[in-house]
Image (cartoon, rainbow, N blue to C red; front, side):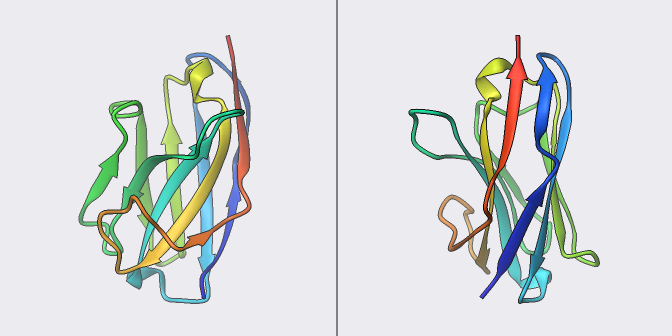
Length: 121
């Protein structure tokens, strides 16, 4: 079992930045792929970004490439999502997810409770 706790959501104006964090426990983070997904009101949950257990590879949705950066610190069992140049369409609940030695990171097994990100125009 992997437990995930997100933090860092909030409200920001368009063009601004936010950094989300996700702390993992229950398993060594060096064995788990971690990712971020989001769900906007009335829409299905979608993949945002993922990072391999070693940090050697990353994957991004086309909609966030060049604006968002995923990173991890295995010594702190934490993954980050740096979000720059935010747009109103980035407004959603953001979920951290994890999978054991899973790649690509588009389908993961463990989920956090979510954190709200709101971008105003």
